Amino acid sequence: MQKLKERWGVTSNFQLTIIFIVFSITGSSSVFVAKPFLNLIGLQQANFPDAWWGTTMYWLLRILIIFPFYQILLVIYGWLFGQFKFFWAFEKKMLKRLGLGFLFN
Image 1 (cartoon, rainbow, N blue to C red):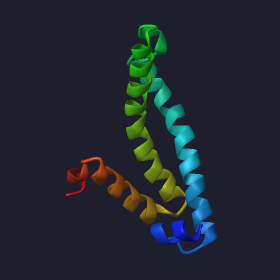
Image 2 (image 1 turned 180 degrees about the vertical axis):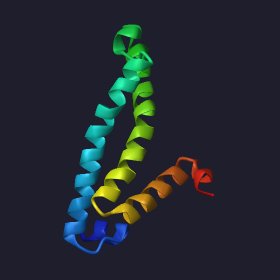
Image 3 (image 1 turned 180 degrees about the horizontal axis):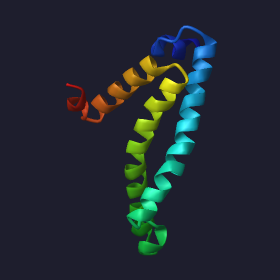
Image 4 (image 1 turned 60 degrees about the vertical axis):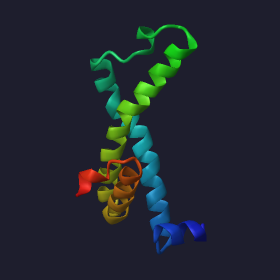
């Protein structure tokens, strides 16, 4: 845990626990929040062929659509739990790695 704390610049075990809680809550709630949107656009597994590529395409599209919800909720929950600075820096670093760093210039 010490290496993780150093890598993230976290000072206490309590702060690290809060960060883990935020990550766990965000993962679950992003799927829950995105579900009505997925239904609205008709992204349901029944709409894809039964072949292996149909299932793969369904899950790939689902993850790509849920991803923006996750990013937004991560910063919101980070703010609610008093860790906005950490999650904002984390968000910027992740989006830069994905080639979306131009969003912050």
